[in-house]
Image (cartoon, rainbow, N blue to C red; front, side, top):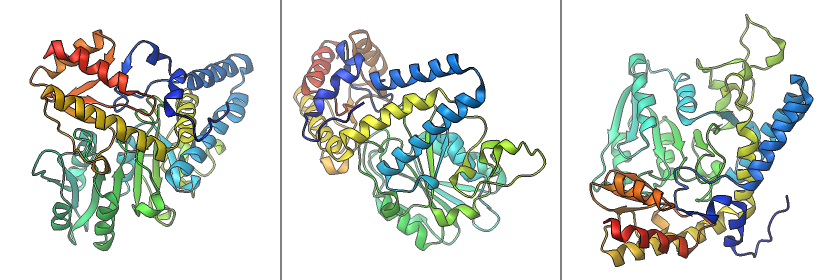
Length: 386
């Protein structure tokens, strides 16, 4: 499919997402909508599977080329080399793979924040049996984690510093580059979870300076569940010998050598077993669209839309639990609606307005294809529910 011209209004992408014909879809921070392009790519894969029959043809002519295209596309989007990328299924597996590479006999401390996504904490807490000591940094306001908290916590006993570039609940941005610099100077490994930033906040991994980075396509990349990219900087790769592994991580997976483990020299060494192939064409369609729309342009448009969400919340007298300055937030506005947030969210879903909730707040997350009218519809339907 042809890329759109750079000057076109981003709302012209609306016809690419059929769900927008019926719903005010303001929930991309939880699940990006499926595109017509992704659907067509998936149909083509199923047709190939049905018509070619023999697995060699399907794998070598369809699945493996799609995997290469995914890495190439993401590498361009993220500012890294394709050989620094592994593909796996979710953040939990990605982090567990990296955790299995870490020797906690000398350095034990793992630093996270209490505002990071829960799976990050779960993975590192599971490493306590291997000697890890997990420390959660506290937030003074429930929205942000000051850099001073990281600076005070990182010391000579720190093995891992984990940071989320965008906090999932408040959508506050964290200066991940500075946190990675602190970790590097202390001799600790830095890991960035960017599930809530990739696709809406511009990224250059080599400039970011992290050791390890992971993000998935489920949300802002409109690629559906089941695919996560795991980046490790090139000069770190030879040191990473995961205990969580599988045959696709080996140098020659089709040698079918049962008794020797020789890991691939690239980031493929961080991959696992047989991959979930039907996920890949869906993910590729989403990645292509985000790349064509352009993350810089998406970022600017989202700033306008989230400003509008904040203005409507102010008009309604509802508290905003997200930084008000565009440069300090991601793509979500958390709007306080009280203890019945879950019921309100589900009532909105029945009215074809899609948001989600955390605690007593609605998370309203417009994407580049949304309009101010979608936001207005959300608040019009919300008013009688309060």
